[in-house]
Image 1 (cartoon, rainbow, N blue to C red):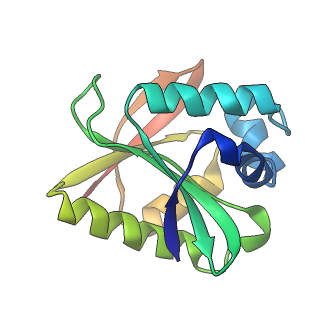
Image 2 (image 1 turned 90 degrees about the vertical axis):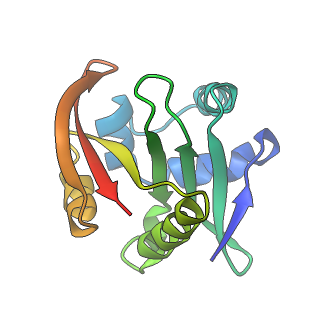
Image 3 (image 1 turned 30 degrees about the vertical axis):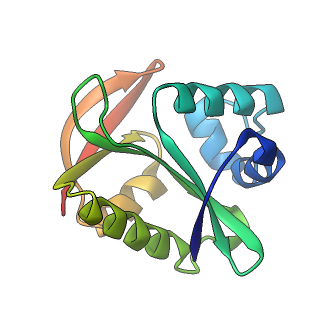
Length: 154
């Protein structure tokens, strides 16, 4: 698996990945399909705050997206903002492979811990992150939704 820096020129690839999982979109955004302009706006907003965004590629196929923020201005923590695997590639171990790449990158950058927020309704997400030994540290609200904040020490 290769991390490939994402650009706005690859928005169609990102849209295909993001819109492959209607359940997640419904839980996260209240709609099954995200319009291109909303995806573009989200990517631009992330880049403006300093997030790093990567496409996950296996051979010649894009299988997911990984985005993280080295230092969240709100709390000073490193945040994994998005790890999404294209629906047809879920349950093939790609999420674990992507996380291992992320962990290695964080260790190289001397990050000791990071956080991720999971919408309370996203039960598959909670199961995945608990299997990664993530520990819930608080519950908060973001965009009108209850979010469980998980933390992992590396």
